[in-house]
Image 1 (tube, rainbow, N blue to C red):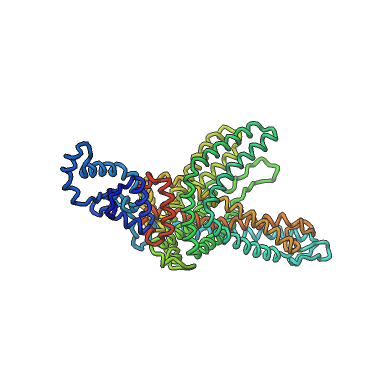
Image 2 (cartoon, rainbow, N blue to C red; image 1 turned 90 degrees about the horizontal axis):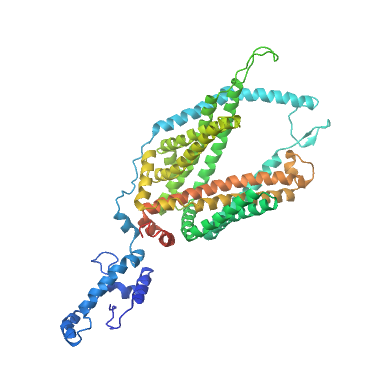
Length: 593
């Protein structure tokens, strides 16, 4: 094989491969030397051998002079055969664009759908149940709460000796009763929330730079937790628990060894998702807003449930000594309806965030100029679509999960009430089946709602298309690897613990008076437990919201790369190189590289 120059030195296979690899990495000198070897007129990965034309005229003379020596034509034939055999294992990995591979597959790329309301009946049904809960809370809930508050108020007045001015001034009124101010708890919560925000920002930055190491740590953490449990159980004499924990430790080590090569792939996905979120941090405000709406709905829902419970409270006729039976109060049907309402609303608000994040990442993927600021056009447009044209699809998918979750809760309650009786086994089996259905639907929704956010499909079409996508790409094995989600979950726990420690520090520096309303005496150390608990819960919830956004962004990146790798390469070349290198290393055959 002759290079571009007229040198007659024969290149070895190793030299040729080295030049091809260097050319694939963008080396201009290597590219100049390799250009003649790759013909634009043949299929990719087929090498054209450049031989001067006048060499062909000497073939007959060479055969007469050296009968046992191969001619140039023989050499060309042998070389072409060798290249043809080896090209499939070398060149496609470095020279073929992923889209060239995907274009040969029988799959239609997703298209943006017209801006019309999809699955509208489910959106109307959700609004109807929301209005019903609010009405019940006003008509039945508020009077029930007022009645209970009045009874509790009178009881406190009797114990306090008639002093009922309702003040809370953290002082003694002279009759031995102390009233506490709750404004200190508010100050403590605000400072703790500020510290949580700082910790979340640091966590995002650390995840972006050291994602691979954190993924390894999260996996090894679970492995060595099993080892720790085995040691503790052995020291306490619990042999069975020690053996099971030791088996779990060994299985964990095997798992770590099996997925070690896949960690760069997970880290590349995490880096891509984090980059998209950091470019559009306004989507985090959307998540916090939906959490606030969830808390408000829970308060209204609880008020409505208390009103219904008070309205249908068990009542008996006659005196307490009679043998007359009492009614059962609120029945299971009413409880089931309330549970569906609660789970449905929680799922809807959570999936609104998920669909909004998918839309933002999709905009950043295909049109980065529209999704590169805090409250970019991509953020606002995605939120509007999630709450208008795609809201019915969100309600549809969320309702399926809500019904299964409510049924599971009813079965779980019945199982607890019938513990030890003959129906316990059947109830246990039913609960297990419902738990499997719930997990399957949630997993299906995770990917289907990404298509809803990207293109605006209805719920059923989105589910079919996303599964057809992975089936056509052969990437089912990829979506089964969920190392990123495990890492984000561990990050939430760590941030919660760090927030709790910061809360204890704030309480110690302040002297503990802000938390006097929690009780425990005047010593500052007695308030450290309450400070840690409040800050831990606050830190865990805020980090869970943030990491939930990142998880949605990572999932969207997986779908988008399967859908449109060339757009990713054109708009984000550095991230593309990082991701495609990791995926080729691990999933070369499955991904078509």
